[in-house]
Image 1: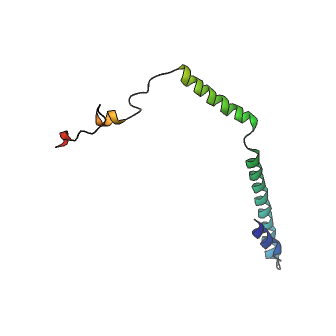
Image 2: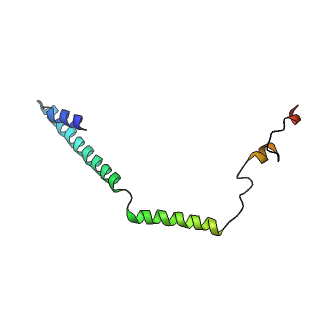
Image 3: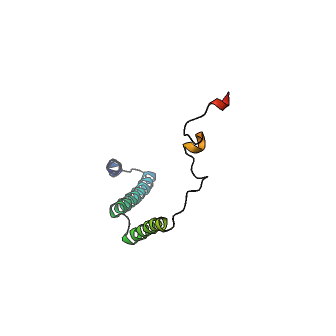
Length: 97
C-alpha cells in the first residue's frame, strides 16, 4: 500500500487526460484504503457479543441434546472392519480363488 501511495503521490500529471486519470486513480486508492481500514478494524474487533451468545447457546443445546436423547448409530452410517472383513476383523482371501 505504501509503495502504491508513494508512486501515486509522486506522479505529476501534465495533460488534461493525465489529470483526469490521476483524479480517478486517487479516488480508487482512497476507496481501497477506506475498505482496507474497515476490514482490519473488523478483524481486530472480532465477533460481537450477542453473536457469541447465539453460537455458545447453540453448541450447549446440541451437547445437551446428545446427552438426553441417546440413540444407536444407524448401521448404514459407519463401516468398520467388521462390516468390510467379516466378524474376525481380518480379510478372508480364500473365497476369491
